[in-house]
Image (cartoon, rainbow, N blue to C red; front, side, top):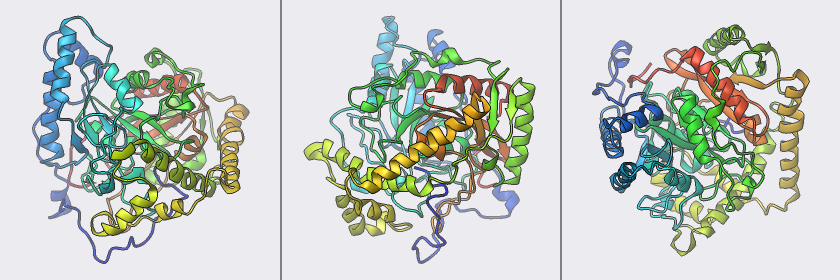
Length: 535
């Protein structure tokens, strides 16, 4: 969960002295801007299709690809630049890849993800020798008895889950003053474009790992901004789908009305392939019962998809960064050249009016949903309730709360059941303001196919004392409505990536993928990271 306007940063996060990150920035600014040395990597920027073609040609096997990624993780995630995006490696990865190679030789190819290494966020259950902890020391040792539906669908599609990624602890729903990408178990994930900058969160490790080419594709989760913000900050394509398109069964929750998993990839094509695998109805998650699922989202990839499309500009999302504003004026001109009809402005009339009520809903749902998840782990659960976790953090404050506390946990624990009038009123208000009076209203009024906005600004310096420094961007209306939102690399400001958001009403993924792909193919804005010490 990424805090925007409704969660305020604090001047001091309770630390008594300045804590320097492990990466020391020494010397002059010119010296500090030098990239951390690293070896060339033959799989840099490779796509799923290219990996499949090389396996078909006999150049690679799933085992050889998996080994290359595992070696690369050791070289630049654990050493060298120390991106620190991977919290745990799968000890069975090579054995899984070996079995998939055997199937390949028997012409039993499961699909485009067959043999492809994937990293998933450490709040997604796997019934294997890896833990699922949400980055919390309180959950160390938690090994669910059943795969999440996301993990099962990946395995069934032939993907090799090579490990789990670090995250903002508890998906950034522990404190107002947190540092995105920091967890008690995993430490601080760094932004591979500038190592002293923040990767955003909460899917920080998935974003940094995919950007740094530590996997073919990655999976993150979002409640509000947690897929799209780290995708923007790491020059990735991130898809936050309609809530219910992907099952949440077996994912450590914040909110059953806003949570979803989503692809985080270097290209729109790969994101569409991954979405095709992840999407589907599931009896374990009732939100999927009425989902409008497409079997193959790649059929919507259209390089001419912007021609004739009516695109609305959410102008009120601008103005937080001069460089971003200039970049987006150029982008709007480019969209026109590509044939889009631009309606500017096309502001969401209710923007900013549901911030407090969103937090109210999340506090209620977090307590109820987390307690339900923990109960489902059974007798082996290291924690049985939110209250248990609060007590653990208090007992282990030197390790868990050295930089920020657990104010959100305490507020959530104080909430009553989901039958409370305050919760029901806030939820109804949120959904009306973001749906029929919000996104739907502006789309209908202007006869639009989609809206656009800057996803976020350039990454801020990681700050363990004061917490995150969000300057602006877009995510909340789509998140609260449960509507789809795709971010695509838009360009660079002061050498740091920023993304463009495409969003619309429920189950508009086909349209958004078409528009995002057309923009990507025309702009080619993504560049791989250089692992600079700073900007």
